[in-house]
Image 1 (cartoon, rainbow, N blue to C red):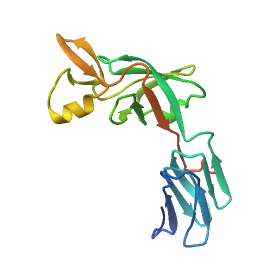
Image 2 (cartoon, rainbow, N blue to C red):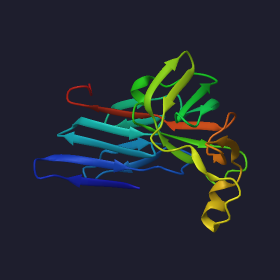
Image 3 (tube, rainbow, N blue to C red):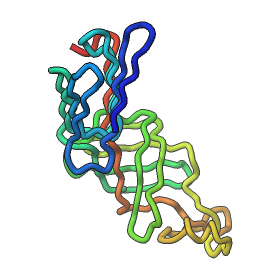
Length: 195
């Protein structure tokens, strides 16, 4: 999907989403310029023929009017190494290259595991990188209620979760060691950072 938005101040936004595509897509805007990307979400603001703002999520290539940005991978993948449910602290080990801290603070990572119905999103707060290990806290509780809860909605989100003793109750925990962590790469350039 591609959209071109012309603003009253003369700037022009190019918005593209290539989500769920196997290959990069090419969009021709209303001025005839070609924009090629595999980004999940991309915004390029032009003034004249020069980009003044570029924001992208989950891409390996952005090629727009002679400007090109590349990343090695769409996302980083790691394995949950340890969890402290009470402190809402998660440690993730990356097998290869780890993202830099600029990619992590206040971003959203997804954690999924065998038997889970769906990945769970977590805001990454106070990230630290120790080699290829990411340590962060999250805002939401990692507890998913008491083990054995019979409510329909609870049963659905509790599938595949481990349990632990907490404050005298057997509680289900949303994240466990061995789960898969993914975070899409992202980029935000503007205010003179473009060229």
